[in-house]
Length: 321
Image 1 (spheres, rainbow, N blue to C red):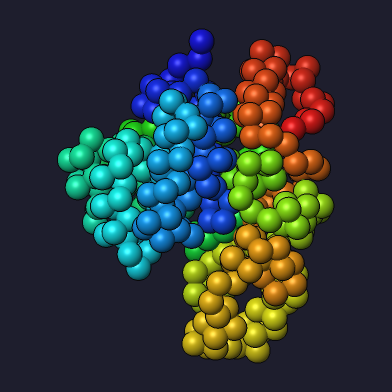
Image 2 (image 1 turned 135 degrees about the vertical axis):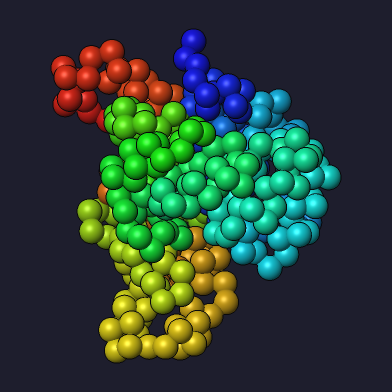
């Protein structure tokens, strides 16, 4: 039986966290990951408060295992989301995109374990000082909204692990068990996986998007919209429009107009691969199939264990997950 500070903190079997991704991480995905022994997260970033409440209740009905909610702190109705989380008795929350000091103390008062996503050692220390139980150190390779520092996972994990005393969860570009092993050798005690779980049967993202993800090659994603909030996107017609606008020096306001409303929903949830905003990580280049979430968890752990038992002889391990 594997045990470390992350498995003990969340009462889970494997130190594998499914990222709370917008338009992908509903109750079906979260409960499937939790039932498989990892920690499933409901992605509240694309949900109104009443929708979040519905997903929490459905997730409770679908699993007796621990699960959590991921919530961006810059969300307009953050106070309503926090109220729903407290009222529904959610025990684990992952926060991102904001100052953890604002809500962590209130969440802790309600016996909620708090983990904050960071992109640098500086922000990791702030999260620790705010009372967070752990941090997710997310490298430049990650999909969706990203840090401005552009620090890669291979550099970020040891830097953050050396800076804080609370447990570190690695994120950014992780889709295989051997990558998981590498991150834990560097000081992480668990991993958060996003892109691999987007290409799962239970993810609520559109099949068109899932197929585009598993069809992506190296170099098919790029960090964009740095004048607003940096986000890694799959290259498509919308991405090219953004690139052209940024090349000619478009202002923040012009970029906001181009981004418009519901671009992410259009692409990732409704499946419009031309006009939608397709947020995904570099790990998409490693994926070739859409699998049940439980298979993804078990494949990650199986390869991690094989690499751990014989890392040299297994250096050519063929990843099938």
